[in-house]
Amino acid sequence: MMKPSDQKSPSRPKELILGTLSQRDFVSGEALARELGMTRPAVWKHITRLREEGFIIESLQGKGYRLKAVPDILFPNLIRRELKTAYFGQTIRHFLHTDSTNTQARAWAAEGAAEGALVVSEYQEKGKGRLNRIWQSPSGKNLLFSLILRPDWPPQKAFYGTVLASVSLCRAVQEIAGISVGIKWPNDLYVGNKKLAGILTEFATDPDRLEYMIIGIGVNCHWAPVEPLPGGQPATSILKEAGKKISRLLLLTRFLAHGEALYQRSQSAGVGFLREEWNRYSVVNNRKVTLMNGQTSWTGLAQGIDEQGGLILLLEDGRRETFLTGDIHLRFQEADFF
Ligand code: BT5
Picture 1 (cartoon, helix red, strand yellow):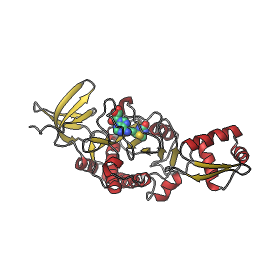
Picture 2 (spheres, rainbow, N blue to C red; picture 1 turned 180 degrees about the horizontal axis):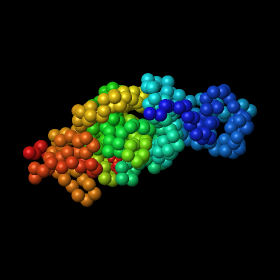
Picture 3 (cartoon, protein in one colour; picture 1 turned 120 degrees about the vertical axis):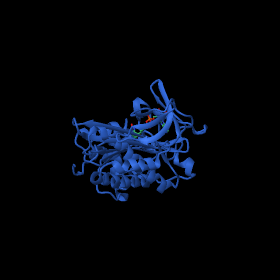
Picture 4 (cartoon, rainbow, N blue to C red; picture 1 turned 30 degrees about the vertical axis):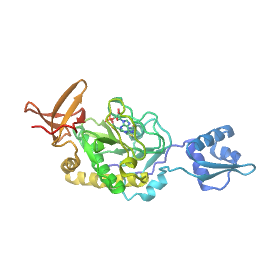
């Protein structure tokens, strides 16, 4: 396992300006430009953007700029202060805007990011679901992050990244929001029949071991799409289900604590116990479901996952089949059959 290092976030102008303003009282535009190696119009442009993102930045003639208030933002130092882990989330890249935290994490992992490195963003321009689907989330409302792991697993075990994340997230959501959540195969967290969170696990192989794994997670904390999105089932948020706002920071840090504990256990005891944990939270087991794979669909009784994470279905004709990919539609209205 690679040891965590203290890699710094890449220098980005808005973050540099914020960093300077957060440490000082008034700073003139001229001093900001000189110290940060920018032109004054560039400083002005970035200050305008920051104000649009919710930062209250006062400006006084003859004195310069002063940071008066910050929006609820997952700054790395705030995350680290709350963290009780050895390496999950100890190295962080935080973005106000990015394309996708998974894309950023992949590039960082390819450059050698440490195990447990975390990419967090307030907003994604190209948030990804599976099969090039879109993950939607307005700025600053929800949790959008990706965790880099380097398990010594063969590629067939990659699904356990999703299993580990699903179980850790169920535990963290229950603790922080007090609501009961379940896992819907293969990669969703559900409350009742509504989607609360999605997980996208990507990986690179070495070739017969995993080189790295990116576990990307989107949790609807304070916003959810109102209408089901194309191809999607209805969505919900913690705010809707719990009737209150929660601390995104605490949810993230509890997730990381549970994740690290389960990951460490999997390294000493193997991944078998994760399957049992997954089955405990599954909302599909012993339910009649329809599984869609492209244009083809199968209906059957879900019977848990096999060793590779494939869903076992007892089909209507009595055959037992295992599916490695697909989307499940829960049949809430119908009485169970068989
Ligand atoms: C997923 O895919 O559910 C995985 C989503 C992973 C998103 C995270 S955010 C951080 C990291 N960086 C990324 O770029 N991605 C990860 P899938 O099972 O394919 O579901 C995608 C479908 O969910 C879309 O086609 C929509 O129908 C629906 N959807 C989109 N945004 C949603 C939201 N906020 N809440 C509920 N459903 C949503």
